[in-house]
Image (cartoon, rainbow, N blue to C red; front, side):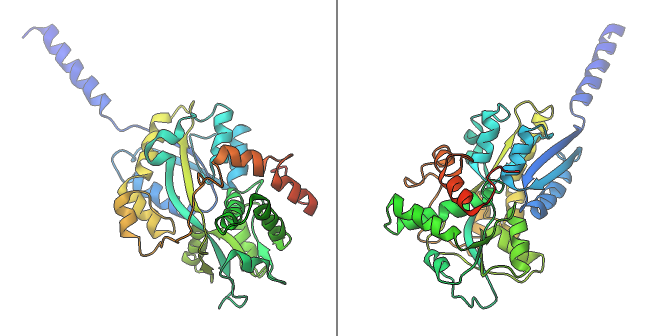
Amino acid sequence: MSVLMVVTALAAVVVGGAAGARQEARLNLVAYSTPKPVLSKIISAYQSTPGGSGVSFTQSYGGSTAQAQSVVNGQPADLVFLSTGTDVNLLVDHGLVDRNYDKQSYKGVAANSVVVFAVRDGNPKKIKSWNDLLKPGVEVVTPNPFTAGIAKWNILAAYGAQRHLGKTDKQAIAFVKKLFEHVVSQDSSGSNATNTFLSGKGDVLITFESEAINARLAGRDIQYVIPRQTMLIELLVAALKKSPNKAAATAFIRYMKSHPAQVLFGQNGFRPIEPAAAKQFQKQYPVRPGMFTINDKVIGGWRAVDKKWFNPTSSIMATIEKNLGVSTSGA
């Protein structure tokens, strides 16, 4: 064998070894507030795998809508985990997330939840249905829909429940308006709203099942009721188009949807989307007979919802909030 052949062979070995070396990356994760505990566990589990051992994370948590706006305003992000399609669409519209993000596996969803009513010990006001929230003297806590994605789901669940009970569009909107006359606190995020409720304010907190369960897991005394008519909450994950770490972000997103991560979601208050994990936790997360989704015909999907309900200057909620003296700026 010639000297040239030997040198060439050794070069190939060196190049091949470099190609298989551990990849290093630091990911900026921007997420809504509730999944902070489970994401820390998923990140730790990912970092113990060969693919994730060289990946570190910077994490930011807050109200979903406020987090999306922060990314638009320049906050560093390689991937986002947000609680509404409206918030992800904001990033799409600013060219930050691919408009086909929902064409990835499970339509871009990483986990699910449902809308529930958190109540006081023993449920003294006997809150079981949406109509119970309008009883005289019942005080309601729900976040501000212009900062918190969870609040958007709460509002759409209230409206959709009425439509599924046979009410017209006008009657269902009137129900939401009446409901907000009972609201005594609108915090900036779901987690802050939970803290307000647990501090003693209000008789009922409209929230995610995952938020209520996470409060329990943290040792806080909270009970909840899943109304017959409720909404399936689809929690979305997406990589940023121009992220310098897009390959690493996409790999972590794949891991979030894998069986080990989905089991962690199930153990920490979230409904898994991966079939095997979903089956494993089906008794813990019952399906209500009146459950509907964002694409239900009376809701119409996030684009229609955003224009009708959540435009900060000319929507149903903008009018309701302004009449109540509540900010719609999202600040």
